[in-house]
Image 1 (spheres, rainbow, N blue to C red):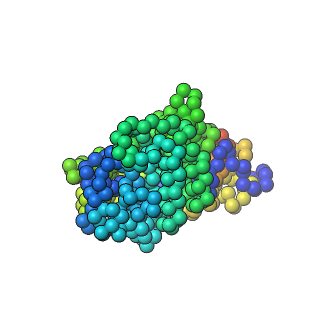
Image 2 (image 1 turned 120 degrees about the vertical axis):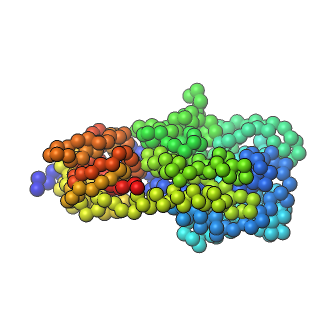
Image 3 (image 1 turned 45 degrees about the vertical axis):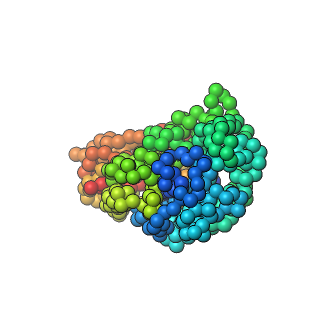
Length: 474
Ligand code: FUL
Protein backbone atom coordinates (compact mmCIF):
# COMPACT_ATOMS: atom_id res chain seq x y z
CA UNK A 1 0.00 0.00 0.00
CA UNK A 2 1.19 3.51 -0.76
CA UNK A 3 1.87 5.89 2.10
CA UNK A 4 -1.05 7.50 3.86
CA UNK A 5 -0.87 10.78 2.02
CA UNK A 6 -3.45 12.73 3.95
CA UNK A 7 -6.13 12.37 6.54
CA UNK A 8 -9.01 10.45 5.01
CA UNK A 9 -11.65 13.10 5.39
CA UNK A 10 -14.34 13.92 2.86
CA UNK A 11 -13.14 16.69 0.56
CA UNK A 12 -14.91 20.03 0.45
CA UNK A 13 -17.70 20.29 -2.09
CA UNK A 14 -16.61 21.97 -5.31
CA UNK A 15 -18.76 24.89 -6.45
CA UNK A 16 -22.50 24.94 -5.76
CA UNK A 17 -23.71 21.72 -4.15
CA UNK A 18 -27.24 20.33 -4.10
CA UNK A 19 -29.61 20.79 -1.18
CA UNK A 20 -30.91 17.56 0.44
CA UNK A 21 -34.21 18.03 -1.42
CA UNK A 22 -32.27 18.08 -4.70
CA UNK A 23 -30.46 14.86 -3.85
CA UNK A 24 -33.80 13.08 -3.33
CA UNK A 25 -35.19 14.59 -6.50
CA UNK A 26 -32.17 13.45 -8.55
CA UNK A 27 -32.91 9.90 -7.49
CA UNK A 28 -36.34 10.07 -9.14
CA UNK A 29 -34.96 10.48 -12.68
CA UNK A 30 -38.19 9.57 -14.48
CA UNK A 31 -41.69 10.77 -13.61
CA UNK A 32 -44.90 11.75 -15.35
CA UNK A 33 -47.01 14.75 -16.21
CA UNK A 34 -50.81 14.51 -16.41
CA UNK A 35 -52.41 17.19 -18.59
CA UNK A 36 -56.14 16.99 -17.99
CA UNK A 37 -58.84 19.68 -17.93
CA UNK A 38 -61.68 21.17 -20.00
CA UNK A 39 -59.31 21.09 -23.01
CA UNK A 40 -59.60 17.30 -23.03
CA UNK A 41 -63.27 17.77 -23.88
CA UNK A 42 -63.05 20.84 -26.15
CA UNK A 43 -60.11 19.42 -28.13
CA UNK A 44 -57.90 22.44 -27.41
CA UNK A 45 -54.37 22.96 -26.09
CA UNK A 46 -55.03 26.34 -24.46
CA UNK A 47 -58.58 26.99 -23.22
CA UNK A 48 -59.75 30.61 -23.42
CA UNK A 49 -61.21 30.61 -19.92
CA UNK A 50 -64.88 30.83 -20.94
CA UNK A 51 -65.52 27.07 -21.02
CA UNK A 52 -68.62 25.96 -19.15
CA UNK A 53 -67.53 23.79 -16.20
CA UNK A 54 -70.12 21.24 -17.33
CA UNK A 55 -67.94 20.25 -20.31
CA UNK A 56 -65.60 18.48 -17.90
CA UNK A 57 -67.19 15.05 -17.75
CA UNK A 58 -64.93 12.00 -17.93
CA UNK A 59 -67.08 8.91 -18.42
CA UNK A 60 -64.90 6.36 -16.64
CA UNK A 61 -62.32 8.28 -14.60
CA UNK A 62 -59.98 5.83 -12.91
CA UNK A 63 -57.11 7.24 -10.84
CA UNK A 64 -55.82 3.75 -10.05
CA UNK A 65 -55.44 3.00 -13.76
CA UNK A 66 -53.65 6.30 -14.42
CA UNK A 67 -51.25 5.83 -11.53
CA UNK A 68 -50.82 2.10 -12.18
CA UNK A 69 -49.88 2.62 -15.83
CA UNK A 70 -47.38 5.30 -14.82
CA UNK A 71 -45.86 3.15 -12.13
CA UNK A 72 -45.56 0.14 -14.44
CA UNK A 73 -43.71 2.39 -16.89
CA UNK A 74 -41.15 3.09 -14.15
CA UNK A 75 -42.30 6.58 -13.19
CA UNK A 76 -41.53 7.50 -9.60
CA UNK A 77 -43.85 10.49 -9.44
CA UNK A 78 -46.76 12.24 -11.18
CA UNK A 79 -47.42 15.96 -11.60
CA UNK A 80 -51.04 16.92 -12.28
CA UNK A 81 -52.24 20.09 -14.01
CA UNK A 82 -54.49 21.11 -11.12
CA UNK A 83 -55.28 24.32 -13.02
CA UNK A 84 -54.10 25.04 -16.56
CA UNK A 85 -54.18 28.42 -18.32
CA UNK A 86 -58.00 28.21 -18.73
CA UNK A 87 -58.39 28.55 -14.96
CA UNK A 88 -60.58 25.46 -14.47
CA UNK A 89 -59.74 23.73 -11.19
CA UNK A 90 -59.61 19.94 -10.90
CA UNK A 91 -60.30 20.26 -7.18
CA UNK A 92 -63.26 22.02 -5.52
CA UNK A 93 -61.38 25.19 -4.60
CA UNK A 94 -63.11 27.44 -2.06
CA UNK A 95 -62.10 30.52 -4.02
CA UNK A 96 -63.77 30.03 -7.40
CA UNK A 97 -66.86 28.55 -8.99
CA UNK A 98 -64.82 27.56 -12.02
CA UNK A 99 -64.06 24.02 -10.96
CA UNK A 100 -65.13 20.40 -10.76
CA UNK A 101 -67.77 21.37 -8.25
CA UNK A 102 -69.86 22.86 -11.06
CA UNK A 103 -69.11 20.10 -13.55
CA UNK A 104 -71.36 17.24 -14.50
CA UNK A 105 -68.75 14.75 -13.33
CA UNK A 106 -69.88 12.89 -10.19
CA UNK A 107 -72.63 15.48 -9.78
CA UNK A 108 -70.11 18.08 -8.78
CA UNK A 109 -68.88 16.01 -5.84
CA UNK A 110 -65.67 14.78 -7.50
CA UNK A 111 -62.09 15.85 -6.78
CA UNK A 112 -59.46 14.74 -9.28
CA UNK A 113 -56.64 15.76 -6.93
CA UNK A 114 -58.02 13.77 -4.04
CA UNK A 115 -58.23 10.67 -6.21
CA UNK A 116 -54.91 11.00 -8.02
CA UNK A 117 -52.97 11.92 -4.88
CA UNK A 118 -54.71 9.07 -3.02
CA UNK A 119 -53.88 6.52 -5.72
CA UNK A 120 -50.28 7.81 -5.74
CA UNK A 121 -49.97 7.37 -1.98
CA UNK A 122 -51.46 3.88 -2.21
CA UNK A 123 -49.20 2.76 -5.05
CA UNK A 124 -46.01 4.38 -3.78
CA UNK A 125 -45.73 7.08 -6.44
CA UNK A 126 -44.87 10.64 -5.42
CA UNK A 127 -47.32 13.43 -6.19
CA UNK A 128 -46.65 16.90 -7.56
CA UNK A 129 -48.74 19.89 -8.63
CA UNK A 130 -48.89 22.26 -11.60
CA UNK A 131 -50.82 25.47 -10.92
CA UNK A 132 -50.76 27.80 -13.92
CA UNK A 133 -49.81 31.36 -12.94
CA UNK A 134 -51.57 32.63 -16.06
CA UNK A 135 -55.36 32.35 -15.55
CA UNK A 136 -57.56 33.26 -18.50
CA UNK A 137 -60.74 32.85 -16.52
CA UNK A 138 -60.12 35.05 -13.50
CA UNK A 139 -61.56 38.57 -13.58
CA UNK A 140 -58.70 40.00 -11.53
CA UNK A 141 -55.89 38.52 -13.59
CA UNK A 142 -53.24 41.19 -14.12
CA UNK A 143 -54.14 42.99 -10.87
CA UNK A 144 -52.83 42.47 -7.30
CA UNK A 145 -56.04 40.68 -6.19
CA UNK A 146 -55.22 37.76 -8.46
CA UNK A 147 -51.91 37.13 -6.72
CA UNK A 148 -53.78 36.79 -3.42
CA UNK A 149 -56.13 34.32 -5.13
CA UNK A 150 -53.24 32.37 -6.64
CA UNK A 151 -51.56 32.00 -3.25
CA UNK A 152 -54.77 30.92 -1.55
CA UNK A 153 -55.12 28.19 -4.15
CA UNK A 154 -51.52 27.14 -3.72
CA UNK A 155 -52.16 26.89 0.02
CA UNK A 156 -55.10 24.55 -0.63
CA UNK A 157 -52.97 22.31 -2.86
CA UNK A 158 -50.00 22.25 -0.51
CA UNK A 159 -51.87 21.68 2.73
CA UNK A 160 -54.76 19.38 1.84
CA UNK A 161 -53.35 16.66 -0.40
CA UNK A 162 -50.42 15.14 1.48
CA UNK A 163 -46.71 15.37 0.66
CA UNK A 164 -45.82 17.12 -2.60
CA UNK A 165 -42.50 16.34 -4.29
CA UNK A 166 -42.52 19.11 -6.91
CA UNK A 167 -44.36 22.36 -7.61
CA UNK A 168 -44.37 23.32 -11.28
CA UNK A 169 -44.47 27.02 -12.20
CA UNK A 170 -45.15 27.57 -15.88
CA UNK A 171 -43.67 30.64 -17.53
CA UNK A 172 -46.15 30.68 -20.46
CA UNK A 173 -48.46 33.64 -20.98
CA UNK A 174 -50.27 34.50 -24.20
CA UNK A 175 -52.02 37.69 -23.01
CA UNK A 176 -55.61 37.41 -24.17
CA UNK A 177 -58.43 35.68 -22.33
CA UNK A 178 -61.97 35.72 -20.96
CA UNK A 179 -61.01 37.37 -17.65
CA UNK A 180 -64.45 37.27 -16.07
CA UNK A 181 -66.12 38.43 -19.29
CA UNK A 182 -63.77 41.29 -20.21
CA UNK A 183 -62.46 39.29 -23.20
CA UNK A 184 -59.34 41.33 -23.67
CA UNK A 185 -55.56 41.18 -23.74
CA UNK A 186 -53.79 41.74 -20.44
CA UNK A 187 -50.06 42.16 -20.28
CA UNK A 188 -48.08 41.77 -17.11
CA UNK A 189 -44.49 42.50 -16.19
CA UNK A 190 -43.05 39.03 -15.76
CA UNK A 191 -40.24 40.25 -13.54
CA UNK A 192 -42.48 41.91 -10.93
CA UNK A 193 -46.19 40.99 -11.25
CA UNK A 194 -46.09 37.57 -9.59
CA UNK A 195 -43.74 38.62 -6.74
CA UNK A 196 -42.22 35.14 -6.94
CA UNK A 197 -40.06 35.44 -3.84
CA UNK A 198 -43.13 35.50 -1.60
CA UNK A 199 -44.84 32.65 -3.44
CA UNK A 200 -41.69 30.57 -3.16
CA UNK A 201 -41.51 31.16 0.59
CA UNK A 202 -45.09 29.95 0.91
CA UNK A 203 -44.04 26.68 -0.73
CA UNK A 204 -41.04 26.38 1.58
CA UNK A 205 -43.29 26.97 4.58
CA UNK A 206 -45.91 24.39 3.60
CA UNK A 207 -43.82 21.73 1.82
CA UNK A 208 -40.15 22.19 2.73
CA UNK A 209 -39.10 19.00 0.93
CA UNK A 210 -40.70 19.91 -2.39
CA UNK A 211 -38.57 21.18 -5.26
CA UNK A 212 -39.86 24.12 -7.28
CA UNK A 213 -39.59 24.14 -11.04
CA UNK A 214 -39.56 27.16 -13.35
CA UNK A 215 -37.34 28.76 -15.96
CA UNK A 216 -35.26 30.08 -13.06
CA UNK A 217 -35.89 27.40 -10.42
CA UNK A 218 -35.37 28.15 -7.56
CA UNK A 219 -34.65 24.39 -7.43
CA UNK A 220 -35.07 22.84 -10.87
CA UNK A 221 -34.80 24.57 -14.24
CA UNK A 222 -36.58 24.16 -17.56
CA UNK A 223 -34.29 22.53 -20.10
CA UNK A 224 -35.34 25.11 -22.69
CA UNK A 225 -37.21 22.90 -25.17
CA UNK A 226 -40.24 20.62 -25.19
CA UNK A 227 -38.75 18.14 -27.66
CA UNK A 228 -37.36 15.68 -25.16
CA UNK A 229 -33.64 16.28 -24.96
CA UNK A 230 -31.04 17.84 -22.71
CA UNK A 231 -27.85 19.22 -24.19
CA UNK A 232 -24.67 17.16 -24.15
CA UNK A 233 -23.26 18.02 -21.72
CA UNK A 234 -26.07 19.18 -19.46
CA UNK A 235 -24.51 20.72 -16.33
CA UNK A 236 -26.57 20.77 -13.14
CA UNK A 237 -25.10 24.20 -12.45
CA UNK A 238 -26.66 27.23 -14.11
CA UNK A 239 -26.65 31.01 -13.96
CA UNK A 240 -30.08 32.20 -15.15
CA UNK A 241 -30.01 35.41 -17.15
CA UNK A 242 -32.77 37.62 -18.47
CA UNK A 243 -32.87 38.92 -22.05
CA UNK A 244 -30.40 41.77 -22.70
CA UNK A 245 -28.79 41.57 -19.29
CA UNK A 246 -32.05 42.15 -17.40
CA UNK A 247 -33.05 40.22 -14.26
CA UNK A 248 -34.37 36.77 -15.07
CA UNK A 249 -37.87 35.57 -14.12
CA UNK A 250 -40.11 32.66 -15.09
CA UNK A 251 -40.96 33.19 -18.76
CA UNK A 252 -38.17 35.77 -19.01
CA UNK A 253 -34.80 34.10 -19.52
CA UNK A 254 -32.33 33.22 -22.23
CA UNK A 255 -34.04 29.88 -22.08
CA UNK A 256 -31.95 28.12 -24.73
CA UNK A 257 -29.08 28.21 -22.25
CA UNK A 258 -31.08 25.75 -20.14
CA UNK A 259 -30.15 22.94 -22.53
CA UNK A 260 -26.51 22.85 -21.48
CA UNK A 261 -26.58 24.86 -18.28
CA UNK A 262 -23.22 26.38 -17.36
CA UNK A 263 -20.02 24.65 -16.37
CA UNK A 264 -19.24 26.11 -12.92
CA UNK A 265 -22.52 28.05 -13.02
CA UNK A 266 -23.65 30.00 -9.97
CA UNK A 267 -26.54 27.83 -8.72
CA UNK A 268 -27.33 24.14 -8.41
CA UNK A 269 -30.31 24.24 -10.79
CA UNK A 270 -30.50 20.89 -12.59
CA UNK A 271 -32.57 20.48 -15.75
CA UNK A 272 -35.91 18.78 -16.17
CA UNK A 273 -36.88 17.61 -19.66
CA UNK A 274 -40.66 17.95 -20.11
CA UNK A 275 -42.08 16.32 -23.19
CA UNK A 276 -45.34 14.67 -24.23
CA UNK A 277 -45.89 11.10 -25.39
CA UNK A 278 -48.12 12.63 -28.11
CA UNK A 279 -47.76 15.80 -30.21
CA UNK A 280 -50.07 17.74 -27.86
CA UNK A 281 -50.07 18.07 -24.07
CA UNK A 282 -53.81 17.29 -23.85
CA UNK A 283 -55.61 14.28 -25.25
CA UNK A 284 -56.88 14.55 -28.83
CA UNK A 285 -58.37 11.55 -30.54
CA UNK A 286 -56.78 12.60 -33.84
CA UNK A 287 -53.37 11.92 -32.27
CA UNK A 288 -54.09 8.29 -31.36
CA UNK A 289 -51.87 7.17 -34.22
CA UNK A 290 -49.11 9.59 -33.25
CA UNK A 291 -48.09 8.14 -29.89
CA UNK A 292 -44.31 7.91 -29.52
CA UNK A 293 -42.91 4.42 -30.10
CA UNK A 294 -41.00 2.47 -27.42
CA UNK A 295 -37.81 3.09 -29.40
CA UNK A 296 -38.45 6.82 -29.47
CA UNK A 297 -39.19 6.90 -25.74
CA UNK A 298 -35.92 5.08 -25.19
CA UNK A 299 -34.06 7.77 -27.14
CA UNK A 300 -35.70 10.43 -24.96
CA UNK A 301 -34.54 8.55 -21.88
CA UNK A 302 -30.92 8.45 -22.99
CA UNK A 303 -31.07 12.11 -24.06
CA UNK A 304 -32.43 13.25 -20.69
CA UNK A 305 -31.76 10.87 -17.80
CA UNK A 306 -28.61 9.76 -19.60
CA UNK A 307 -27.30 13.35 -19.51
CA UNK A 308 -28.01 13.98 -15.85
CA UNK A 309 -31.41 15.65 -16.32
CA UNK A 310 -34.77 14.22 -15.27
CA UNK A 311 -37.42 13.04 -17.72
CA UNK A 312 -40.93 14.42 -17.15
CA UNK A 313 -43.04 12.50 -19.66
CA UNK A 314 -46.59 13.68 -20.22
CA UNK A 315 -49.42 11.13 -20.40
CA UNK A 316 -52.73 12.85 -21.18
CA UNK A 317 -55.82 11.10 -19.75
CA UNK A 318 -58.48 10.74 -22.46
CA UNK A 319 -62.19 11.63 -22.35
CA UNK A 320 -62.92 8.51 -20.37
CA UNK A 321 -60.41 9.72 -17.77
CA UNK A 322 -57.84 6.97 -18.23
CA UNK A 323 -54.59 6.53 -20.14
CA UNK A 324 -55.39 5.40 -23.67
CA UNK A 325 -54.54 1.85 -24.81
CA UNK A 326 -52.05 3.11 -27.41
CA UNK A 327 -50.03 4.98 -24.80
CA UNK A 328 -50.15 2.01 -22.44
CA UNK A 329 -48.82 -0.30 -25.14
CA UNK A 330 -45.97 1.99 -25.99
CA UNK A 331 -45.00 2.49 -22.36
CA UNK A 332 -44.94 -1.29 -21.85
CA UNK A 333 -42.59 -1.78 -24.79
CA UNK A 334 -40.33 0.97 -23.50
CA UNK A 335 -40.22 -0.46 -19.97
CA UNK A 336 -39.44 -3.92 -21.28
CA UNK A 337 -36.29 -2.64 -22.99
CA UNK A 338 -35.20 -0.65 -19.92
CA UNK A 339 -35.69 -3.65 -17.62
CA UNK A 340 -33.88 -5.98 -19.99
CA UNK A 341 -30.99 -3.51 -20.10
CA UNK A 342 -30.62 -2.29 -16.54
CA UNK A 343 -31.74 -5.46 -14.74
CA UNK A 344 -28.23 -6.86 -14.86
CA UNK A 345 -25.05 -4.90 -14.13
CA UNK A 346 -22.30 -6.88 -15.89
CA UNK A 347 -19.72 -5.15 -13.70
CA UNK A 348 -21.16 -6.85 -10.60
CA UNK A 349 -18.54 -9.07 -9.03
CA UNK A 350 -15.66 -7.42 -10.90
CA UNK A 351 -12.38 -6.68 -9.12
CA UNK A 352 -11.96 -2.92 -8.92
CA UNK A 353 -8.66 -1.11 -8.58
CA UNK A 354 -7.77 2.56 -8.75
CA UNK A 355 -4.40 4.24 -9.11
CA UNK A 356 -5.27 6.52 -6.21
CA UNK A 357 -7.57 6.18 -3.21
CA UNK A 358 -8.01 9.10 -0.85
CA UNK A 359 -5.74 8.52 2.14
CA UNK A 360 -5.81 4.83 1.21
CA UNK A 361 -8.94 4.68 3.32
CA UNK A 362 -11.50 1.89 2.82
CA UNK A 363 -14.33 4.45 3.03
CA UNK A 364 -13.08 5.91 -0.29
CA UNK A 365 -12.20 2.57 -1.90
CA UNK A 366 -12.66 1.91 -5.59
CA UNK A 367 -15.05 -0.99 -4.80
CA UNK A 368 -17.62 1.55 -3.63
CA UNK A 369 -18.61 2.18 -7.25
CA UNK A 370 -20.19 -1.28 -7.35
CA UNK A 371 -22.13 -1.40 -4.08
CA UNK A 372 -25.30 0.09 -5.54
CA UNK A 373 -25.32 2.86 -2.90
CA UNK A 374 -25.28 6.57 -3.61
CA UNK A 375 -23.86 7.56 -0.23
CA UNK A 376 -20.58 5.67 -0.71
CA UNK A 377 -18.07 6.60 -3.38
CA UNK A 378 -14.55 6.26 -4.70
CA UNK A 379 -12.54 9.39 -4.03
CA UNK A 380 -8.91 10.38 -4.55
CA UNK A 381 -6.38 12.60 -2.82
CA UNK A 382 -6.79 16.34 -3.41
CA UNK A 383 -3.95 16.46 -5.92
CA UNK A 384 -5.03 13.37 -7.86
CA UNK A 385 -7.50 14.96 -10.23
CA UNK A 386 -6.82 12.71 -13.23
CA UNK A 387 -7.06 9.24 -11.72
CA UNK A 388 -8.09 5.97 -13.32
CA UNK A 389 -10.13 3.03 -12.20
CA UNK A 390 -10.00 -0.48 -13.66
CA UNK A 391 -12.76 -3.07 -13.55
CA UNK A 392 -11.45 -6.59 -14.06
CA UNK A 393 -14.46 -8.66 -15.06
CA UNK A 394 -12.66 -11.99 -14.67
CA UNK A 395 -13.91 -13.12 -18.05
CA UNK A 396 -14.99 -11.29 -21.20
CA UNK A 397 -18.44 -9.71 -21.20
CA UNK A 398 -20.34 -7.90 -23.94
CA UNK A 399 -22.02 -4.58 -23.21
CA UNK A 400 -23.22 -1.57 -25.18
CA UNK A 401 -24.25 0.77 -22.35
CA UNK A 402 -22.10 2.29 -19.60
CA UNK A 403 -23.57 4.19 -16.65
CA UNK A 404 -21.58 6.58 -14.43
CA UNK A 405 -22.57 8.78 -11.50
CA UNK A 406 -20.80 11.35 -9.37
CA UNK A 407 -21.47 11.65 -5.65
CA UNK A 408 -23.63 14.77 -5.89
CA UNK A 409 -23.29 16.27 -2.40
CA UNK A 410 -19.69 17.12 -3.33
CA UNK A 411 -20.72 19.11 -6.39
CA UNK A 412 -19.80 18.65 -10.04
CA UNK A 413 -16.11 17.72 -10.07
CA UNK A 414 -15.47 15.89 -13.33
CA UNK A 415 -15.21 17.87 -16.56
CA UNK A 416 -14.22 15.10 -18.99
CA UNK A 417 -13.61 11.36 -18.95
CA UNK A 418 -12.70 8.46 -21.24
CA UNK A 419 -13.49 4.74 -21.26
CA UNK A 420 -11.05 2.09 -22.47
CA UNK A 421 -11.35 -1.61 -23.17
CA UNK A 422 -8.57 -4.18 -22.87
CA UNK A 423 -7.89 -5.74 -26.30
CA UNK A 424 -4.97 -7.94 -27.33
CA UNK A 425 -2.78 -6.84 -24.47
CA UNK A 426 -3.41 -3.11 -24.58
CA UNK A 427 -5.94 -0.42 -23.74
CA UNK A 428 -8.14 0.97 -26.48
CA UNK A 429 -10.41 3.95 -25.96
CA UNK A 430 -14.04 3.27 -26.96
CA UNK A 431 -15.79 6.32 -25.53
CA UNK A 432 -15.19 9.75 -24.07
CA UNK A 433 -17.51 12.38 -22.71
CA UNK A 434 -17.96 15.74 -21.04
CA UNK A 435 -19.63 15.88 -17.63
CA UNK A 436 -20.91 13.06 -15.42
CA UNK A 437 -23.04 14.59 -12.65
CA UNK A 438 -26.13 12.79 -11.51
CA UNK A 439 -25.92 10.27 -14.32
CA UNK A 440 -24.07 9.81 -17.58
CA UNK A 441 -25.17 7.05 -19.91
CA UNK A 442 -23.04 6.09 -22.86
CA UNK A 443 -24.70 3.91 -25.50
CA UNK A 444 -22.80 2.63 -28.53
CA UNK A 445 -21.61 -0.38 -30.49
CA UNK A 446 -21.19 -3.60 -28.51
CA UNK A 447 -17.85 -4.00 -26.72
CA UNK A 448 -16.56 -7.44 -25.69
CA UNK A 449 -13.72 -7.31 -23.20
CA UNK A 450 -12.50 -8.65 -19.88
CA UNK A 451 -11.32 -5.30 -18.52
CA UNK A 452 -12.71 -1.76 -18.60
CA UNK A 453 -10.91 1.40 -17.55
CA UNK A 454 -12.44 4.73 -16.54
CA UNK A 455 -10.03 7.63 -16.95
CA UNK A 456 -10.84 11.06 -15.58
CA UNK A 457 -9.18 13.30 -18.14
CA UNK A 458 -10.03 16.72 -16.70
CA UNK A 459 -11.50 17.62 -13.32
CA UNK A 460 -12.02 20.74 -11.26
CA UNK A 461 -11.32 18.83 -8.04
CA UNK A 462 -10.48 15.28 -7.02
CA UNK A 463 -13.29 13.11 -8.37
CA UNK A 464 -15.94 11.40 -6.24
CA UNK A 465 -17.56 8.60 -8.25
CA UNK A 466 -20.43 6.66 -6.72
CA UNK A 467 -21.46 4.30 -9.47
CA UNK A 468 -20.13 2.49 -12.53
CA UNK A 469 -22.30 0.03 -14.47
CA UNK A 470 -21.98 -2.00 -17.66
CA UNK A 471 -25.15 -3.15 -19.38
CA UNK A 472 -26.30 -4.93 -22.50
CA UNK A 473 -29.30 -3.42 -24.27
CA UNK A 474 -30.93 -6.20 -26.30
C1 FUL B 1 -46.30 25.20 -21.45
C2 FUL B 1 -47.82 25.35 -21.52
O1 FUL B 1 -48.19 26.49 -22.26
C3 FUL B 1 -48.31 24.08 -22.18
O2 FUL B 1 -49.70 24.10 -22.39
C4 FUL B 1 -47.93 22.91 -21.29
O3 FUL B 1 -48.60 22.99 -20.06
C5 FUL B 1 -46.42 22.89 -21.07
C6 FUL B 1 -45.96 21.82 -20.12
O4 FUL B 1 -45.98 24.13 -20.58
O5 FUL B 1 -45.66 26.33 -21.07
